[in-house]
Amino acid sequence: MDPHKLGRQNSAIRKVICELLAAEVKDPRIGFVTVTDVKLNRDQTVAEVFVSIMGERNEVTKTFTGLKKSKGFLQSRLSDILRMRATPDLRFVVDNSLDKGASVEDILAELASKGEFMDEREKRKLMVLSDLHPPEQLLNSLNDCESFWIVPHTNPDPDAMGSALALAMALKSAGKDASVIGYDNPPAGFKDLPGFKKIISESEANSTEVDDLPDTVVLVDCHRIDRTGNLQDTLSRIGKKICIDHHLVTGRKMPLQGWVEPIASSTTMLIMRVIQEFDGCSLSDGIAANLYAGMYADTGGFRFDNTLPMAHEAAVELTRYNFNASMLAESMLHQKSRAAAELLVNVISTFTFHGDGRVLFLSTTQQMLKDTGTSLVDTEGFISMAFGINGVKYVAFVKEQPDSSWRVSLRSMHAGDVQSVAATFGGGGHKAAAGCTLTGDYDEVVEQLLGLLLELPVE
Ligand SMILES: [Mn+2]
Image 1: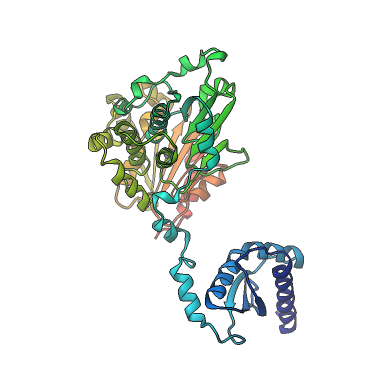
Image 2 (image 1 turned 180 degrees about the vertical axis):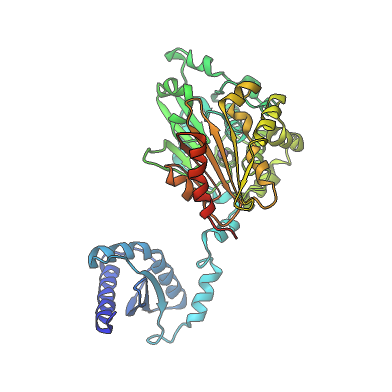
């Protein structure tokens, strides 16, 4: 760009930032600050903003922190006001040519010691369990209401069921009336979860008279009523609906009120925090067993990338209670019914390797489920097994649904982002685990997915 134009851009940005800092940025940390200069780089993607900050060292540090926090706001206002095609990334630089009081190195060192320059991942590694704070409103709702149905999502996994059972036990110990609603054909291992034998079945729940419905439903491990399959109509008749979940909110539909915290490795981890913070209830052997089962299963036995140090912290606390953690781990993650073992034999025969073995496809059909007397719940854990194969970096598990569409679970053990592949087909998830639904002929479905998976990084 011609240097004059660049100079004009620099001073325009400087002027706007000065005005915004004076009039619109309300961060109380920001003290006396002067923008001394702005330097855009050649392709205008980065603008260094030189600031001189008056005051004692701690005031300088506070102001600098405030500026960094206001960066997003400043960038979006800048692009509005200057109608920029692409807003440059603002990088604040302390210019101490005016003030010799504090050295830049000292300020940066102090900020670094407070975690200011850490990325999200590093910050999460330092989090402890008590950094998860159940919202006051959720605790108040649990306190104010008297009768509850605790409902996991359809095809519940151990995290959903463990969350429901633990929360119901805790609420009961606090003098509330609480029941867990389950679904037909639960996985074999669930019988080992304390309290599982007492849950209310789907059909029983659906035939409950309106007058006998509880005042509140708490959804666990999901945040919308449309994840509760055949229970939806009945649940929609209950006055108050809240949720506790760790899944990312995607799409346009709003989650229920409650607590959605995707940082947590499992919903059971959130339930543990609710129980710890809720007056009148505390952990017990049965509650600890249910919480541990969910935490163990959702982290794949503390193997998955979502296993934060605070998941281990929770496990330390839970395993001090009196229950058989090794037996529970075995039945949650590794125990299968004989029918599921037969299904596994069928599924293994569909293993197909592509791209020198880095992409693995596996599938189930409705016919396989029928032949073996199983349901999709019994496929739990198959995908992790596919991952255990040396050289496999990406896995696609393609499951035929009753309506002949294909539900696809994608996993990445690697730099590649499978969420981007899922998003192409309107799905969602995380970088390492995502899902989407496709329709059409099986071979076409594989071809479409394979094209994208082979484009993901090899190394
Ligand atoms: Mn979960």
